[in-house]
Length: 243
Image (tube, rainbow, N blue to C red; front, side, top):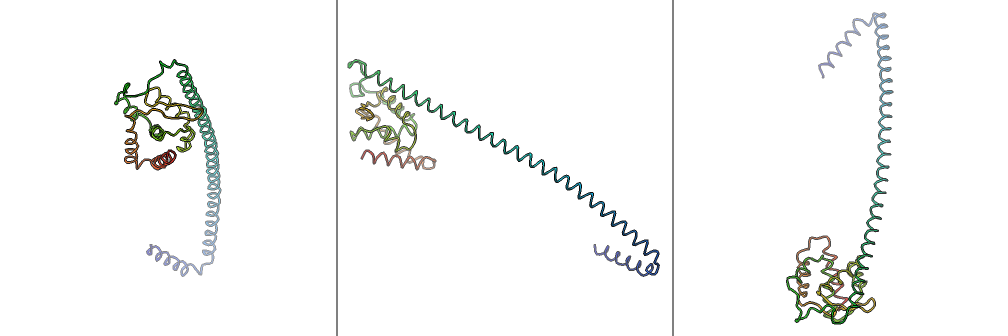
């Protein structure tokens, strides 16, 4: 790079020394440099024009893409809202069906002759222990807490409303809890009596007392689960409710 600079300096020096007195040559040289400058300026103008045109095209494409993304985002949001509404409607329908089935079963049991009602799970009519334990182990975590609450209701002889337990559990599963207790009663796992909205657990299968061990195992083995803290708090609230 420095060699080029030295040679350029020597060239300028020679031109100034040898051709400086020659006014005609200087004029020609000056005229040539002026034309060159004009030509370079024209090139720069055209280049700037085409660059601006390309930039405008790019900005137009970006603007169009942004509009398409915004439109697609709006459509996606509408689809999500429609899906949520559909799921809410389906959940409400299922809950209504489950509640209706449970009430029909209650009505059916109420009109059966006294001697044909389901017997309680007593020593004279024991259930298979494997069946009872399988019933517990195959229940969801929520249902296992319901059984835990039923055990406390039985041992404390305290009545409760489903809404009380659900408010403790902090979800909208009244219909699910209703159906689960009805199913448990039909399977002779537990036996209940209803007085309006009040429930009372009058029989609790002896093998069901493993629910204490099940709940303790959940607490010990589920520390890393997202729902662990909620589970602990819910169990504590249930304990307080039946204290």
